[in-house]
Length: 353
Ligand SMILES: Nc1ncnc2c1ncn2[C@@H]1O[C@H](COP(=O)(O)OP(=O)(O)OP(=O)(O)O)[C@@H](O)[C@H]1O
Ligand SMILES: [Mg+2]
Image 1 (tube, helix red, strand yellow):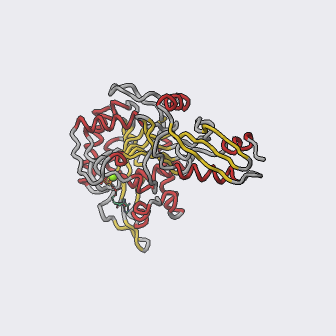
Image 2 (tube, rainbow, N blue to C red):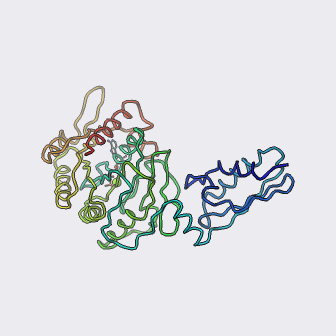
């Protein structure tokens, strides 16, 4: 005969796949009924149509079904009431959804790093993804906010699929491993509809993302900004006065020229420029370096700004492939590639004040 304590013991070890906490702790177990060897578990989901319902059901069926004397396991679902959801949010320590656009500073990360380039296609998203992965490998909790409303790409580059859960107005990020959380504005935009963002709308959307995502306490939040970032930088500077700016550039003069503009913007908005990363610095073939896009533009820009050059990333086919296939080289590449991004992450970490 199965007893209820044993069933609840098993349930206390099964986590909600998104909230990463035991079902029992989330008050999601409504009932346990035992009839001889037949066990019925009532589960209350946080939101209707929860995409991970199947997984929860499977975990319970397998776990409880393995108990001595268990013959059948049924899982019955219902959905939390508004009241229950409110209690759960309080229990999880979520803040109330922000009503205001006001400047109340956010504080869920120790450092906020906005990545800018001023010019499209310099590899900003690829660099951001790999640097974030490297930072997570160093043991830090890292968040990635893909705020590029025109060309969101981070979740794909990171190899994360699915849509984030919403609890009321708040967004639970997707996760990769223990240390990486990610949210893209792209999750909430219909990919088939071209979006024209007017300034105020963009300001509002970005503000919402900065305020309404429920990150676990982070060491670093990286924000991938859309190119040509005047307005967005301003929005971020207002919401996160402590944010820092990381500038990604290719070596040629035109790129450094625009990147310079971004840095000036940082000055105007009071965002501190943390450093420069030069991407597509050279291409190495047969031990020879070819400087396809010119040479030392990153160094020049860094000197001009009086900030460190934090790294030079060569053109690498595998960097592009890793981004396309969701296996960033910072974790899945050669030891040299892993070391290259780890070195950059350490340098960034070393700039902490
Ligand atoms: N060092 C590199 N070596 C090879 N390919 C690279 C490198 N850096 C970036 N790429 C590739 O260049 C393309 C553009 O990169 P990415 O999307 O990261 O640029 P971006 O600056 O974020 O662009 P956008 O302005 O459109 O957001 C991608 O296909 C990416 O895989
Ligand atoms: Mg990009």
